[in-house]
Length: 303
Image 1 (cartoon, rainbow, N blue to C red):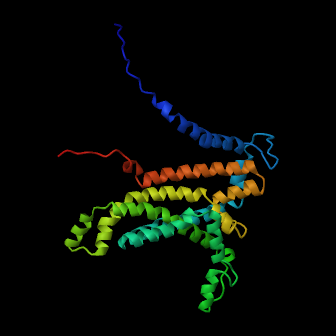
Image 2: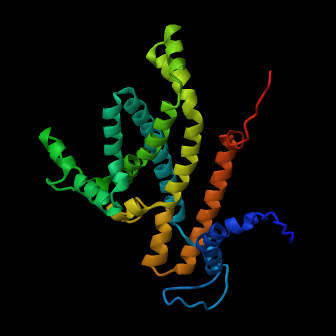
Image 3: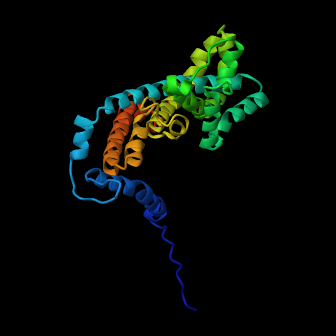
């Protein structure tokens, strides 16, 4: 009778499990960054030919592009106003109010508010174009006309306000969903104990609900700020960045310089600047909001 030994099967190395994710990361994230860096140091134009490697694109950004300061100021106003007024402020308000009403009504309201995010960007942009139409057919002018007010032309007179409103309304749904989960995760006995101790509804909101929302708001602030810095599709569809460059943030400016003018190398240099801005912003936010402690391993104390 022969003796057979069954050898224990060795588990596969963790690298094997990570290989598909690493491959996708390398192809769709790292490779475009490397290509962008290489193109930024060339003179590639509309003919897609590289004649020489040069630093002139960066000299142009620093010394000769007079639109850069205006574009950066527009970006600062656009990101700050959209982030704090809508993406955080309105999102938190929607989360708190929609959890204070009956569940069915709150779920219906949140689902209704999520429709713009689930609908195509073109359809959402057409809706805002109709709202801001300067003729009497526009929704806004129909409302102002009913009160005897003069017609408004937001796309020409207040384009930056229009894109802030359009991006803010759809962006508030992200914070609404996350903060709704945070509000619902608060144990009910905490609010009940506060009310028994004589706290008003404002006191419950301030001392029970608000502390539970602080960490999710930190995450939303970083995520939405970086998203606003890099996305521009609604602006491109609604105002096109105009009139002239009045509603053009930095990301859209990169697109217009690269694809409208055929200056691909200069657009790549500008994109490299956006990468630096994004990394710097992330590090500053990480430091200011103390995200290192937020995601640190929990400490368990035994008394």
